[in-house]
Amino acid sequence: MRIIGLTGGIGSGKSTVATLFAELGVPIIDTDEIAHTLSHPPSEALKQIALEFGQHFIEQNGSLNRAHMRAHIYANKDAKMRLENIFHPLIKSIVIQRLDIQAAHTPYVLLVVPLLFETNTYSNIIDRSLLVDCSVEQQIERVQARSGLKNTEIAAIIANQLPRKARIQLADDIILNESSLAHLQSSVNSLHERYQDQTCRFT
Image (tube, rainbow, N blue to C red; front, side, top):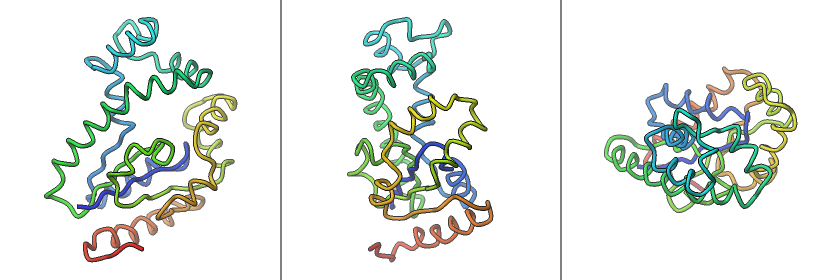
């Protein structure tokens, strides 16, 4: 079984691409989805966050106060690293468990990791990286449309990710998501055929 690491900047269309692969029957393991689950009780991550950062980062219902934490880590790089040290090992452990379950049942799995190149957490696991790419202007426009975040908040998130040029240089495969859904579907179909072929030697 091959492991394809799917990544891209915020608003690039990772979720849409993952959905298109899923519709083709490809198993999807999404680290953001796992992190979201860990942000709600019961969760070992929440216990560690309360100890490391304080109980005021936890909502009354026991969930992580994501807005409060987001503002804190973007203003404090040390806090970001401390939070990653809590989440990343727990997320990776769940990823490994899910990969083991899929190993005998599919030619390949799509592992969605927004910060694939920034953290290198999964560099020793994936066989190939797939980048969903678009212009920074489109990133901002899409994020504003779906989330209502302020420009300053979006800019802070983008600044926390590798520049577009660096991501392009690191990626093995690239899907350009700047036109129609039909074009995106065609790109996904083409890569799906390649990834399914176990005899294909990637170069």
